[in-house]
Every structure is written in C-alpha cells, then in structure tokens.
Amino acid sequence: KAGVTQTPRYLIKTRGQQVTLSCSPISGHRSVSWYQQTPGQGLQFLFEYFSETQRNKGNFPGRFSGRQFSNSRSEMNVSTLELGDSALYLCASSLGQEAQLFFGSGTQLSVL
Amino acid sequence: QKEVEQDPGPLSVPEGAIVSLNCTYSNSAFQYFMWYRQYSRKGPELLMYTYSSGNKEDGRFTAQVDKSSKYISLFIRDSQPSDSATYLCARDNSGGSNYKLTFGKGTLLTVNP
Image 1 (spheres, each protein chain N blue to C red):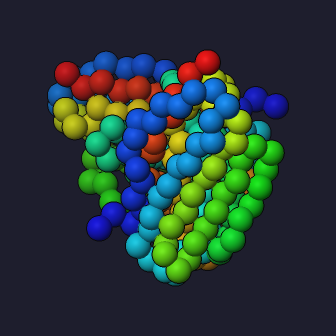
Image 2: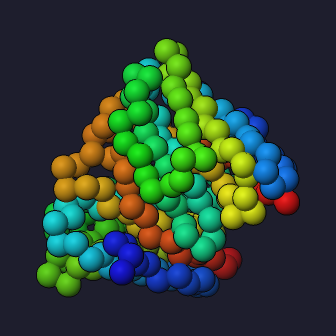
Image 3: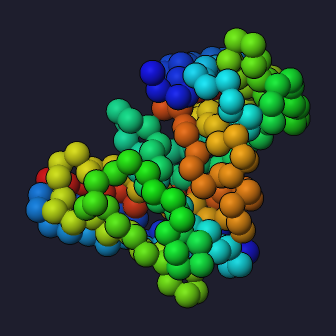
C-alpha cells in the first residue's frame, strides 16, 4: 500500500511569491492534516481536512490556506511568502479523527 | 510555557547503551501521549502510544507516563545504530482526537557503533 505522497520534495521561492504544495493520502484515508516543521518552533499544526471540509485550524495567518478534493487529495497554499516561511511542510493522513496519523516525507520550502 | 517541553539534546551514546528521552507537559488534563521517530529527510512515524499513566513496552522500547510529575519518558534498551533519529514526544487533546497533535521540539539521538 502506497504511503502518503507529497510533491514537490524541494522548492525554492523568493519573498512575495506564492506556493502550492500537494499531498496524496493513503488510499482510503479521508482525513488530511498539515504541519510546519522548523528548527526553532518544531512541528506546528496548520489545519486538518475531512471530506473536503476544514475541521480544524492552527494559529497561522490567513496567508496559509488549504483545500481537499473529493478524492481526499489535499493542497496547501502560502501567499506572499516571507523568509520565515522557510520550513519543512508535512502532510499526514488518517482514517478518521481518532486513528493513527501517517506522515509523508514533506516538502522542504526555502524562501530567499 | 509551551505545552510540551522536550530535552533538546543532541544525545550521543555507544551501541548497546540504554537511552532515556524525556518530556514534560503543562496541562494535567492531557491523557494521550505519543512518541514519534523521525529519520533524516523523512516524516515522523508513530513509535509508541500511551493513555493516561503507567508503562507500555514494545520490544526494546518502553514508554512511561508519570501524571503526578507531568513527565513522559521513552527508554530504548540495547540501542542500535539504526535507532539514530530525532525522537518527538506529542500529546493530543483529552478527547483522543489526533487532528491537532502538540509536539515537543525533538531530541536528536545518535547511536555510535
């Protein structure tokens, strides 16, 4: 069974640009969560989607947004990039709210 | 105060050593605690999951929760070079939902052959 797939693995952008990251969950998983990982702050929850609806959101500015499609694939978008947005963005999927999270390998975003 | 505090390390031990990794948490209402392992350039993977207090053992790994002191620990016996990774403690909300895990910052462990 394929794991959680995130694309692209690496991205380099400049300040002010926007970026879209993609996540394909494990087949059958309907919940997708996004996390940001930085050396200074560690792993921080961004948001969670279930059946195309955002159920929960972390404490990030509105520049961070996401969506989920009918096939459970998810995208997250960051607009007006800032240097501090440089991080590893991790997607995780699960069968449901109380099920184990399975993480992808992440997208490493560098903002110059 | 951050909800979950973790010893930053890094920690370097010889092969075969017993490793102790520790975290503290601030809210006594927390019930579910987890340990994740993250290899370099990979996402975290669930290692151990415990509810409330007490010990849970899985092979060479033992997770321990001490609610009176708000302390969670992971012990690795007979450590191996393949155990070299970053270990993250986490808690979810008291209802058991995993959508919003709160992680410690992680401890980088290196096991030297």
